[in-house]
Length: 205
Image 1 (tube, rainbow, N blue to C red):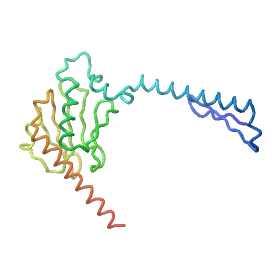
Image 2: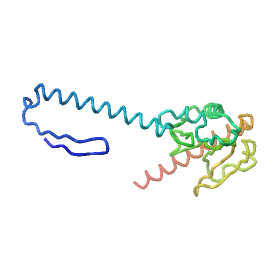
Image 3: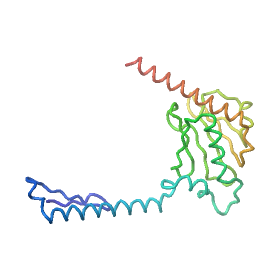
Image 4: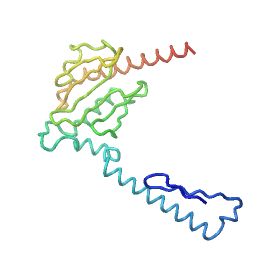
């Protein structure tokens, strides 16, 4: 039997067994029982540590809705319920959209047809929530997205991709028709791009 330190909280105990009878004893059973209980205690302690040091990973929804990353010294010009309202509009336009609450300063949106992160709701600013949506290069013009919210901006983020970015303090600032066109159009465009890239790769093989 050898004992080796294997990490900050663990040791590795290695036992070379030739016959079952060597461990089928009261002492062997007690050792396994105690090792299992120690492992359970370690898992519980690590889970508690994550909850304390990285609460957004354990209860991300509550973290963002309660605006934990907004400085308490700054007046909040929007409420966490805006996240839920905007997500409702996103999912009404496309039910396949999935949200990930486990990031510290943003709620990430993904779509099964789009590779990587498709959109972000950035929640750590007191003045407003920032919304970022990927789309095709040149797909949208300023006139097509000018009623999405405050300070609407289109910027290039990749050779073939733009990002539409805007700020919201309340849902009434966001034009529903423009948002729906942005959601459906960007997903369709990025899906086409991924399918073309996949097809090119298949041809090369």
